[in-house]
Length: 245
Ligand SMILES: [Fe+2]
Image 1 (cartoon, protein in one colour):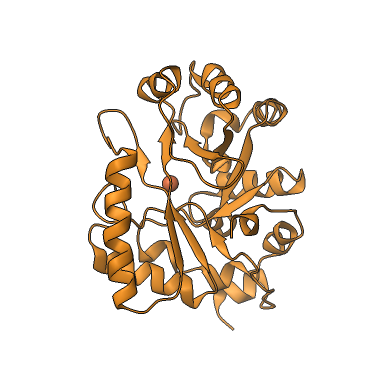
Image 2: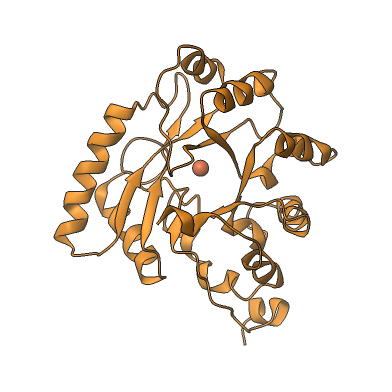
């Protein structure tokens, strides 16, 4: 028994999550996979761990990652060709992870179509880790009024919310859903992020789980996670991942 097993117990439960909806696997367009070889490695690994579909979500951030629906679609189609050559039987789609900045709000104000996924038009977005944004309320309002379902990426990772859990209760009341990162449950990011992840699970305030993988390193703990007490608790929640299949 390894150290991890000694600490967390060794009884794994079934990971029934068939769809991963947050990753940076599309090559060369953000800080994730840099080439299709890296992408294929991650896709093969996720396929081997039971994933049937990947909704890949490159960053979109004004002045840093200026990805567009057109450029994302092109990279997706090229990657699909590579995956077909390897005969990996997995569905591949793309959306985005929007950073909450002026550029994002501008897109909303101009009613430019956003990259989204699922019948409910889920839009994955993130904010600064350090500071909340004055744009928050307007962005959520605009997403909702335009028929999107906002999904906040990794709520457990935002330092500004640690002293004030009400932040998330308020967002939930305004129709924001929450996506937890798998690795948060292992303490990969920080103990604080792990504790917030556990608190969100305790409150039933998790709607999706995602790997948020940028590189193979982020996928190393996929099996170990399934042995954690809080993973089991998470699996008991009505997660929406498999509704995306
Ligand atoms: Fe991400």
